[in-house]
Length: 284
Length: 275
Image (cartoon, rainbow over all chains, first blue to last red; front, side, top):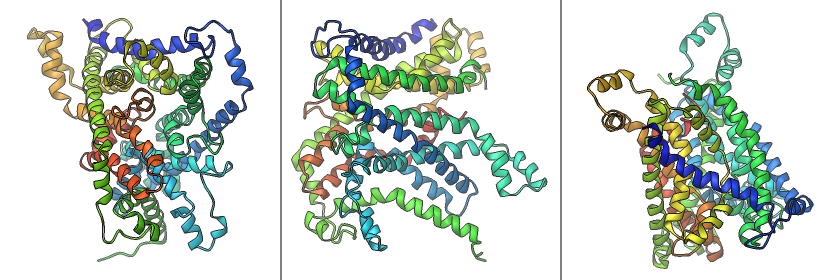
């Protein structure tokens, strides 16, 4: 009986995850263009390794990874402030969370205008007398990645705040009471109670966001720059997508997909370690 | 008596206020721009839309694509979420309440699959589905979305089902209820909040998804709203208010859902991390 119940779900998983993962490995060793390919050994991987655009794309993903600590610290600060239940905290909580529920393409296209020559970012700079710093934020190869990263942080921040607040709400009140009796000040309570209690959820957030930066940023890049100017804001997902559907080079797209899968797997292992205990114990 | 704010409270208020304004500003910008004519927008991008105009919305409706894309998104989202919920409920029930070989393995596998990037899967899926006529078809994308919703859904539902009181199942077993009977008359009625949470989060994910929609529904008549919206910017490159009107229409359903059911969003998105 249990097997009958899980059968449909397992069938979907075999079809949507199992089959593609096996096939992408096989295709990565086949001739890049032919539909019924002949084996070319590691040639596809060789092509990729020699392609500067691949390294640019991978480098951009790595750049995005550095946004994770910033995002985590800011989310933590906001959560701690809101947890003190300052006046209007419920409204602040809702507003800070709102970007996370908006679709990425919607946010992306809106920010194209906000980043524009006469967009709000440049207008604010001009208004405070820093007009000289006004930039073509998405058109300059050196600024485009930081600009995109800001938008990613803008959206994902709300998720972190929400996670941290939810966990804080379940910290036992006695811990704080005991600390108060011992004369712990605000900072000591944060340092010795709140943050340690949040350790699991912080590491969960960090892992999720690292995975996001590595392999879930296609929608941001596609809707804001399409990878441009030139390839300045290309990322691995975009590279795969271009080779797969614009250049029709199946073998090369598959080779990069395999590399991305391997990179992601590292985080999958970490993810399993974090949640390992949870999946073991049935009862709560 | 009204107390004055201490310096640190004032600092916190200023900080939170500016963050809140920054967070909501793009939504405001979308809205106010969409209510301006192109001419009014060029003269003053940031001012209030006075007098407001609905011309942009009218133009989009007249263009006819947005209503079609909107319906496509409704169809694909509804079908995916319904099928995923049913399939996941069955599996989650088995994992949470029955013991069988491979149970722990299955749950671990699902956790691992949650983070597999779609970009890795789309090309082989496309090549596999093309000969079967499943590209440019609702069925094809729905199958993919259901598959991708299952890991999180089973994970979330099974942890929800575990919190149901065991005595109920004992009592039902003594009364001779079958396994399926218990699912239908104990688990389902008691899991209303769990289901609502899951459906809200899954619907949001499918509605907002871009990459798969872009690749698998390329025919203009089959596009989902998100994929369609990304084409607006090149099509109406010189009419920003019109593009913003389209974007706002795309954001509106989820925004409304969020306004009325914020706690379900929060609960669902937090479900994976906080017990």
